[in-house]
Length: 178
Image (tube, rainbow, N blue to C red; front, side, top):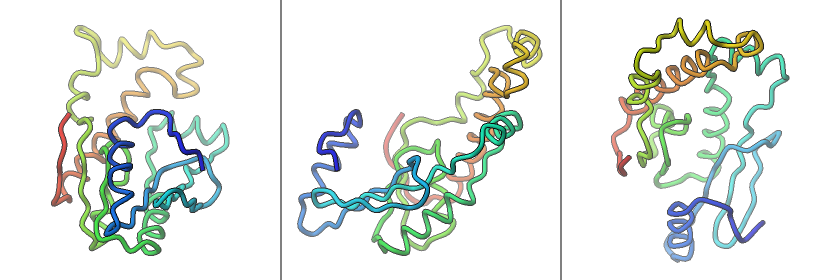
């Protein structure tokens, strides 16, 4: 395992501070482009790679075109890791992904560390004077067919913001700031 992680900043600093405490067994799970859950052991840390669910090019286009957000496989994978690790607490960084949904599926306390709030950005997505229609008619045919237009990105983001609101509604423990 690589000793130097590119990026991370304060999250990496927190990991380095916690991993050498004798009373703590630290496990870190993250999405990765791996075909199955994979455990890697580092310096006093177990890392769990969670499959990001590779899809064909066609399925990626369909997913983007219709703003499909499917959390079911990630929830299943997360629960497998929770069952394996049996953590005392689950600390989630950010609400933009589906990790915070674990509060609905486990009795283990889930602490969400806020890094930003997607819901706020929905009301400020378009520049002043722009509408969905203006964005749509100014998109290229390629963007419309592949679901990669600003219009499609907005609807994907809107669905992620709805998932975020569901996460906030079920959490008991929230920390951090934007």
